[in-house]
Amino acid sequence: MPLSAPARPRRLRRAGLLLATALLPLLGLAQTAPAIQRLNPTNWWVGMKHHDVQLLVYGPQAGTLSYTVDYPGVKLVKANAVENPNYVFLDLSISPTAKPGQVKLVGKKGAQTVTRSWELRARDNAAKAQGVTQADLIYLAMPDRFANGDPSNDKFSDMADPNADRANPFYRHGGDLQGAAQHLDYLKELGVTAVWFTPVIENDQPLTDEGGNMRSAYHGYGFTDHYNVDRRLGGNAAYKAFVEKAHAQGLKVVQDAVYNHVGINHWTVKDMPMKSWLHQWPSYTNTSYRQQPIVDPYAAQVDRRVTTDGWFVPFLPDLNQQNPYVANFLIQHALWTVENFGVDAWRIDTYMYNDLPFMNRCNAALLTEYPKIHIFGESAVSNAIDQAYFVRNKVAFPFKSNQPGALDFVLEGGMLAGLKEVGGKDATGWDNSVQRVYQALAQDAVYQDPTRFVTFLDNHDHNRFLSEMGEDLAKYKIGLTWLLTTRGIPSMYYGTEILMKNFKNPSDAEVRRDFPGGFAGDKENKFTAAGRSAAENDAFNFVKTLAQYRKSHPTLHAGKLMQYLPENGIYVYFRYDNAGTVMVATNATDKPAALPTTRFTERMSGFTKARNVLTGEALPDLKTLQLPAKTAVVLELQK
Image 1: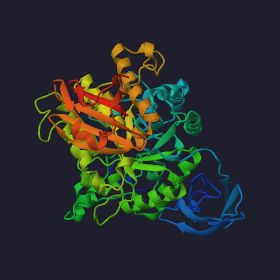
Image 2: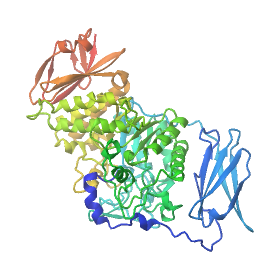
Image 3: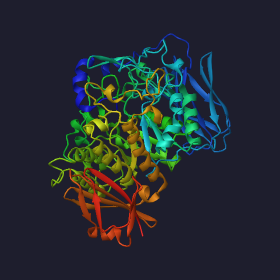
Image 4: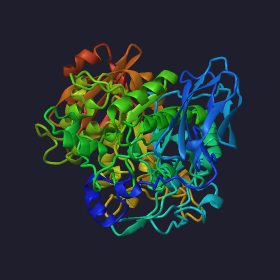
């Protein structure tokens, strides 16, 4: 999400935006002729396992019509009238024998007749829902800040926010999907195998006052029309073209999904189907941002409700997923998106704030239709028990989540805290430095399958990794080595590979700066080796070497993990399978160390030599390893 929890309360006091109760529409019957303006989902496909569709029909007095459907294989089961006469929800059943074509909807009221066509399409054989695994390296980018391929779509005067100005860190900068598509070769060279964009769905949102700054919704987390990709990014056609081009180059695409809330300008909020479409309170109520009341067996019900039903911020209305119409709307959109655009994996924003039974239902629908798709959500917690609650786990919780994966905040926290102590007085402490990483992984027993967790060192809501490390390149390299060699699916935030830096304070915009070279007029082009400094090329090549090795060596990306209790600031673990063994040894102290290997016989027996993956150096003798200060070495063991 675009805002960090510690900063939110201050910003909320200043926001002065609409409250939930101010969003309720006036539902009096208007004296206008019935019409149909929207159908959601905009189409469906024959042959889907999900063949019962609830069609949202919207328009002036659309809910006062009596509907019929006359199309072979499509049956109108029920027409559901709701509080707002501008809506009706039609339950359709699509037979396996139905053929592609235009389904004619007919609505009648007295002498008035309204007709609309709704398309049934044939499914294609294009790649989709391939999933992501430990074999992948995900690259997270904000499309508005990555590259601008079409300046003509930078801004539109008829949108709620008509601004685009790269000189203003809070406005849109003009990056788009066409620009990103032009740099897929760069990602492939780096070793990336999957691209994750912050949401691309339309955010026709007004500028919002956050901390005294008028900010655009360039981050993408305030949807205003689920079935349209934002035209400032290129629209639906550009997104489909991007996915197709990525697939053609062997890259997967991760969709960033938001179920918990929508933008305050979402058309269903401006004229709500019913009061219960959103979570309503007597007066504006913000979430506490606390996960504890969800997991706590002793929690008060009111605390649970505030966490899950409170609004994230005033300009992101909170959807009521216990309302069956809301649930169907969101689930069908998820299925439609995968089928229409061909995305491969599904990242879920603010996972823990959603209604969890709804999340199980939605996850099950996606996995039933697309068994290989990977789903991983954002639950920003700090301990393994809380993290386990929101994924498939081995704990006797009263609620059992079916989410396959998660963003691994626990491991991120261990790595960042441990790295800050590398080379310092706490490098050999009882619970410090590399011990923190060891301990985070030692708690994996509570998860059903931690190899499906997405690991990371920073993202669009956190301080840049290099800055967190005090711009210490030794710590930077150790962290990236861990990220690319331990269990899980690594994710890298755009620009980390070229030493982009900065902290969230005084604003999130500081960690979301433009990628140099992605925009016309940039003085430097970091997409090319010639445009990077010596230090930037060293960082890029470091990541490239390890990522490409990881990509081509299943032992490293899919082998089992065995870690040894750190001693004297030295942390050793192995990735291994029947084909080979890779050893990772980290010296967290500020002095070189000699490491006898007899302790590691369980994993090193039979190996007599090794190759240093990062330097290419041959090691003819493994009895004692020489570890430089503040360094992680990656060794391919050989017999």
